[in-house]
Image 1 (cartoon, rainbow, N blue to C red):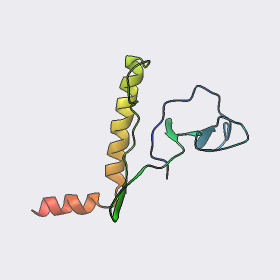
Image 2: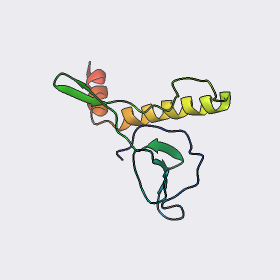
Image 3: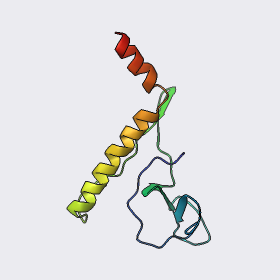
Image 4: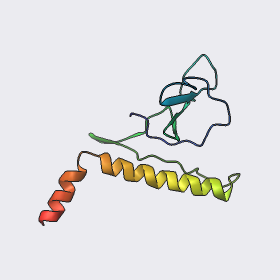
Amino acid sequence: TELKVGAFAPRSECTHSCNSGEVKAYAASADVIDELTIFEYKGRFFKNMQSVVHVKDFSFRNPPAFMPQSSTGHSTRAMTRAAIAEVESHIDQVFHHPNTPVNIGKKLIQ
């Protein structure tokens, strides 16, 4: 699973794999899957992009972000759903990270 950046549910209809498969795609154009495409997997929506931070010789992926930059134009319910999705995705990211068992083991030994 490479997609990590969250998205709001698209307003358009599903364009690819709508009745089959685990992943549905919502593209701006029915013929093209591009950076504007939103994917649905297990009821969650993801942007077709990868966010990586580079600092000198070190790089890491940003955690998923579902919250919009501004609450203007978004209902309280939509903001609440986005906050819950962001927290759940962050917990998933930490839980599935390969360093988590090592760090928990180290803390238990200390």
